[in-house]
Amino acid sequence: MTTLKTCESAPPLDLPLVGGGRWRLDQQRPTGYTLVVFYRGLHCPRCKNQLMELNSKLDALSEVGVGSVVAVSGATPTGRP
Image (cartoon, rainbow, N blue to C red; front, side, top):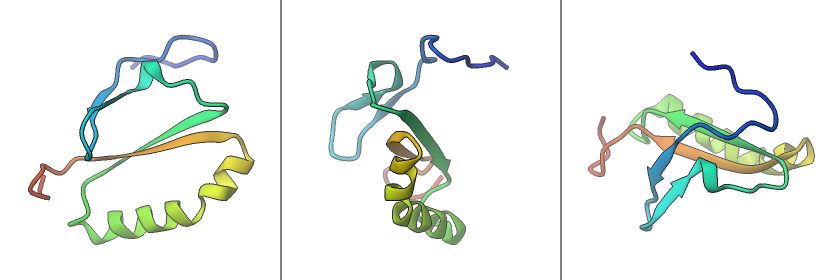
């Protein structure tokens, strides 16, 4: 496993967006940290609750330096893993 260090280039992470296009970690330039959350999919009740809780804490995360939050689903476009 690679240990990430401050001021080093981000590892490659290229993801499709729900509305089209792509999101690439190495192209992000947030004003603070980027939080990437991986979850199984909205079919999972625990994941759904975790995402709702995360959404309710976006302001608090911003206050502590998180400039960008990305949620990555492991589900297929049909909604299942």
